[in-house]
Length: 531
Image (cartoon, rainbow, N blue to C red):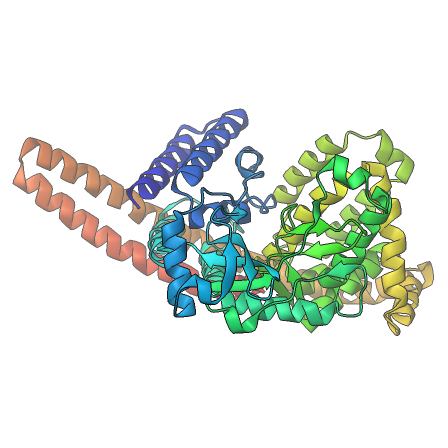
């Protein structure tokens, strides 16, 4: 706790110092590189929950600086295994007896070890090999301490650190992170997720999900069928398979595209250790501790977004982004439509000539400058997509990915029944005649719309400026009071100490009052951002 708090305190001081000194953009870039490096080293030293926090933050390139993201983007949830005696004690306690009454044998060396659980290979009495996932010793108390410390840091950052407007809602992110961790700590939840995916893919021959032994599984132990497979990053093994790399890429997309676009659960952590391939070319999915869920409403808007982009109906695409919560309230729809049209106007031949890495960095900068934000509920969807993208790049070159994706998506679309008609309707709406009617209708409403926007913006900026200025002034007085107390203590001058304490208390009350007023006034904006 002390190491984590001291790291956070130093980072906060650096941010304040850089803002006070009005440092250049390049200086800020170096600072965020240093902050990311310090965070990374602290994460590896303390392990536990922090690794998962780092993995989550690494998906937020829409909000966090590039320098910070670069330092943490390849964090892997691997920690040294526990002592066997501790693991054995947990198994005995969960199974209510010695291991010999359940297992024929068990390897004492962990096959895999992560921040919450470790996996061991065992043999049941009937000779069946199984994978035994065991919760790490004392992980409950470690997580409890990590969450308590993190909540203190987030409270301080939310109330005192000068965050940019529209920045990530830390409280909502912490709430979701806590829910995910608590769910991962209960292996019964993972067992239920595993059963769900078994049912979902029961008729798909290209996918293999391990069976689960419910009678041996508990909230701290999960016993599953042992399945041998090859890592997709192992080029030598992949080259010896019965299917080629392009077919493997297609199969991966066939497995994950429906998870991303249809209502239901999706695998949120498809890294190379959790997605294997059998010698026959079956995709093997493992570890369902981190899953997300897409509602029916969100799935409908996602599908409308893709249909809008494919048919170049950017009005509908922006409308879908708004409903999904990707656009902040201040986003101007027409500007976003023009931006989408410009970005998507490139032909495949032009993409090949570009420096795609440089373009990706430029897009990140552009997204950060625009009123765009990934809603918290889609963080794990983004993680799932980006992680799988890494696996696909091992199987297909940059220019092959589009040619692999298009037939898989069109095949999925053709199975959606009525969606074919909606696709045609989106295409018709994007044609000149429909655009002319739409533009004329909007033109008639324009005077009233502009008047409403003008009045709203004037009131918004005026009130926001008043509240924010008072809040900043009281915060500066609080700091002044603390400095005065330090001077009073150093000089042993009681009057200075008493005056400084009085200034700090009064300023603190004023700060809290205007913080409350500011949050109350902006409440409607927060709700839209949270989605």
